[in-house]
Length: 343
Length: 162
Image (tube, each protein chain N blue to C red):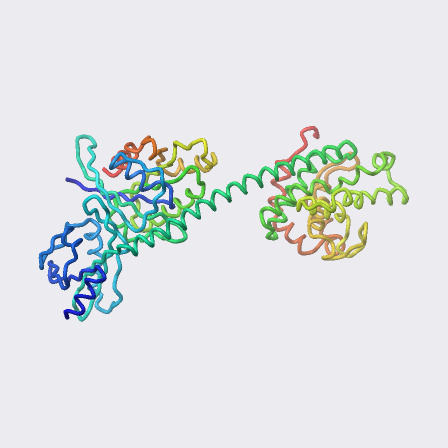
């Protein structure tokens, strides 16, 4: 090795050894740290001097045997105890002109710099985690409040509406299944779960003489009844809360039909907000498969046949397909959310 | 004397180095010092009148900046997966590492150190996650800060490796 090369190696705080048989021969000047750690005999066995090095030499032997592999094999950083302090080292195995070389490098200040950077980055990640947890906690508190307000609104409307509490809750669960199935994000899924039960909240503004009238409504009465959609939308609209925005869409448009023949505005197709299109399907499903004071429950297959006949006129065909694909989940909800006071 | 290699594994800042320092040197430093690469410590323990040396491989934690080099696991007779009870996602990281351990070492004994027991009032691991973890693994609640259960977890793993 030329003097120049030896000087260069020394200046980079490395030591080069060549493996011959079971021995390693020093091929460059030995730095102080190497002498302190493992002595500086010109020929030595490195076996047993360092647990980590022993481990790496197994990999190095395999690397040297793959004579076509000229990319040095690196051990990655490892620490060796030198007196009271720790020395950051890295080993590399290289095959040069069929010579099996082991290069040991003191990573020195480069390691300290890397450690400093990584420490800062990881502390930053830890701070980020704390912030994310705090945001998540606060969000959860806000969601809890939204849910409570929605439940109290629904409770208030319940004094006037004859729908059962279980029906209202099921509409929320069904709508969440639909929203998840079409790829809504988890927050929006939670929003529709809370918002959908408010679909008929506008009935609070319908006179008792119409809302609670036994028997059929005449045309004039039915026109008034239909206004529950716009009343509900008005109650819930102009909010900056995403859940209430969805609730306003649902309350206002869940009686619109895919072909434009619904009310209150005669909107058609995708002009009807998607949340309202979802609720229009699950509301009809739940109403058909459960009994009411004025009708018995239909068997599910009958209810589904009736609903299929409404695809393309009343229901969004794609959403109806999603509904059919997730029928098992709706059945599970039906079984789990039942009225305790209804036989 | 019999030697056993143990790997300390887990997400970053869960307390792997602190557990080793507490076990080997009976010291604890409250400040977080990130580990780069590998640091190996030794401790002789006696189990059932048999002495053996534990070679403790403290590997840098997993995160976006560092993935565990599987070659470091070679020869390990057991692993301690460290989870920080105050950071639920460190359990997910532990499960991922468990997959790497199984693929590299096969069926070696693993014990989970559910660490930072001194901060138990701040733990955020939900009950379901804890139940699932305890069904799948031998779990010991530890605190490198107080020293609680530190000797015990190494002893437990030692017995499983015997």
